[in-house]
Image 1 (cartoon, rainbow, N blue to C red):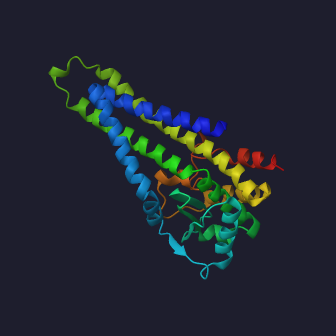
Image 2: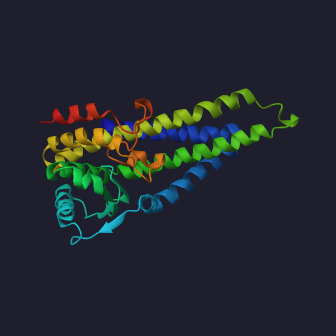
Image 3: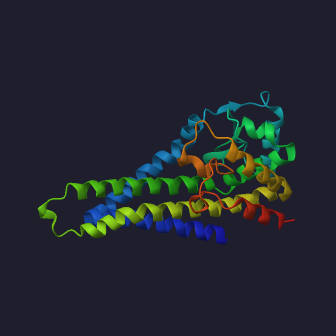
Length: 275
């Protein structure tokens, strides 16, 4: 229950900053405009985010005859999780990684790089697949989309504020330019940290739910040990930082403060404690 409460709280704080920025620029009217911008971005993200990210990485949908072992694994785990069968995609990348996307269990997809299929054994791949299905079951992808949409809206409004300062005239003497500059500098960092906190919170929950789906937390723990090491050594050719929170492990070796995922050692520790 704490996971859900914390996520809702962080989304509320993120929305507050969005509306506050609108007020800084244009008072009550600005608050309304800021909220409308956020809703517009989230509308587009809600309906098209899965298609955008799968296209970005060149994902190719597979059927049972293409990869029967992987396809039937997903089918079996989906039944255990009480989920409809998601679409399954393969990404032609050597980095071992995977992600889930989609706005709901009825409109979902799981994607695996060729690297992760070739690198992990069957049990470890089961652990990864269950983790991605857990994201779908827990509606994490929708939450991440909303958080990303609000963050994008904050970025747009900060750009508007920045340009308004650049073109400020003597008639704007009543404006507190210094305060607005501080907002421009601090707000993106706060928004980023809130977004990362949401991603980290949902990652722990997906680990726990995934372990329950597959029936053995060691499968995912062993997979994470391997993925943490090798994913950092093999770059994604089509990598975009905006999508880093989707993957099971960070596609890039970020500083831990700005990592979209919790520390791998802590994730493994929690999984092993479930035994």
